[in-house]
Structures are given as structure tokens and as C-alpha cells.
Length: 144
Image 1 (cartoon, rainbow, N blue to C red):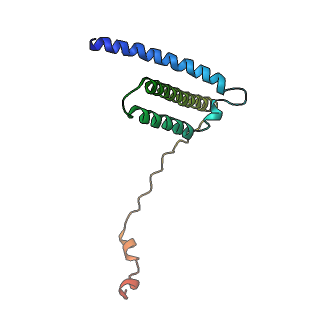
Image 2 (image 1 turned 120 degrees about the vertical axis):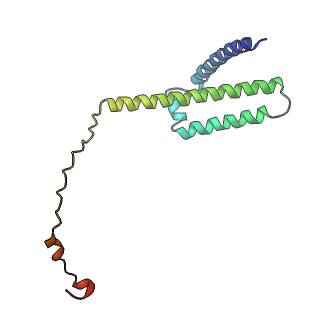
Image 3 (image 1 turned 90 degrees about the horizontal axis):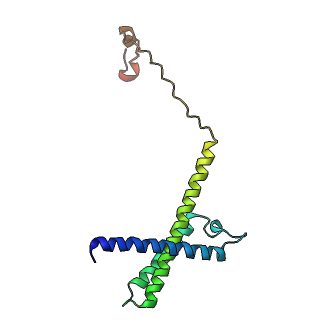
């Protein structure tokens, strides 16, 4: 198999993987989500996404680097990676939703930016001989 053929096969497998991810996401979505619970209930903030994806990565690492691969372990690794892909897609969708909400909010808010007025030029003080003569030097030298 040439390099081009391998790359072509990889893209076919990626497409299959994404299709499998969508199928599992839909199946589990029906099991987990109902009127009382939604995705935002399971993951109320970004820390929750980070935590679940970290756990999946740790599971992947422990399975991937543990002895010779067996069919059962390979299937478990695939399942873990599919879960990781789905959690990443949830995080991505939540980020997009947050961005849309912010755009909608700011679309209705008129933000006025204050315009700085030009500062007036300060008048120059002319130094004259009389200005210098009127200074009292008694505090410095003790004499006038």
C-alpha cells in the first residue's frame, strides 16, 4: 500500500469514526437527557469538561501502554477515544453557544465609547528677571 493509499484509507476510517461517534452520542443522549437533565446540567462550567476529558485521557494512557494489545483492550481503547471525541464536541458546542449568546446580548446593547477631547495647550510662563529677583533666599543661606 502506497502512502497516498494509506492517507486515503485514513480519511475513510476517520469518516467512519465520526459516524460511530454520532451514533453513540445519539443513543446515550436519549438515555441521559430528559426534561429534567440536559447537557448543561451535567457540565455547568468549563472545569467539568476539563475533568472528564482528563479522566478519559488517563484511561487511554493506561490502556495504550499496558503490555501487548489484545482485541478486548483495543475495543476498550476505541470506546475511550470515542467518548473523548464526544466530550470534546460537547465542550466545543457549549463554547459556540456561549459565543452566540454574547453576540446576541451585545447586538442589543449600544456601547458608547467616550471620545477624548483635545487638551488645550498650556500657556508658557515667561521667565523674567523680576521672577528670579523676588525669590527669598533667607531660608537657604541665612542672608538676603
